[in-house]
Length: 310
Image (cartoon, rainbow, N blue to C red; front, side, top):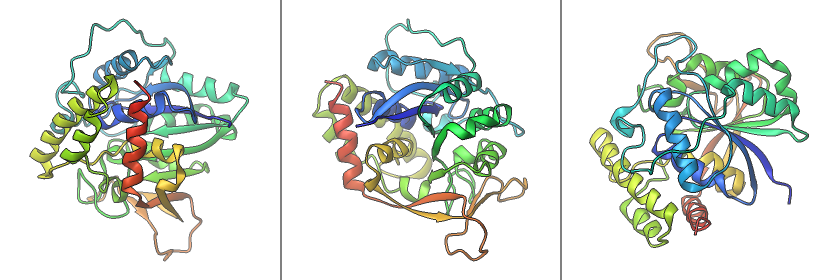
């Protein structure tokens, strides 16, 4: 079986942490590196979170720091959900793993351009690093298999009525990627809001009783408290692992091919992913959008991933 060569671009973040966990030891994935962007917290915090996660889970890949702010708009972080550290709820041991000295954009370009196989880019945060890389190194496009992202919504947002956080955090970057001509697959709130970390899910994973399950349960308990405080839900949606779970088993999600525009008008719908689900406009289709998720299968794959750390 030929492994999927993958780079994970993220902003850890509780749900990013589980995405890293799923990508870090799956036999179907060859994780080439992790690039980090500001998003759920500042770049300093998301960067150290990525290092801590890799060290704790023994994921031996380069971790590269990327953009500390969006292309145009002011930075927006999310302490209400992810806390002051960006990963509240778990105390890591003293950090000894170091950042790779290559900037994220250079790592992305170098790795993609030199690879013998086409590379899948997964983004679970603002798309700033990838957008800059595509503009500086347009030949990258020839060696990118697809961009698989958590972000957007064809229905309602979660930071404004129109916009989802990852896209709203840097709409111009998303606009560049969505209009790059690359194969883009979008896993938005329409499906991630259906995979809720309910208390019974945490209990299920706790029974595994290994280092990954301890990390999962401690992080998710704090995540749920914060989600309940902000949104009044008993279990927070575990957004960011879904693109990775899809790569492991594409049958988890149903996709539809649509035309999608990113609203960069700076109006009340700034950051909205305008998906023409019903093909009203008859425009070229540029994005595959997730419209359905098999929740039971999703949690089975999460459980299998956690068990691999035993």
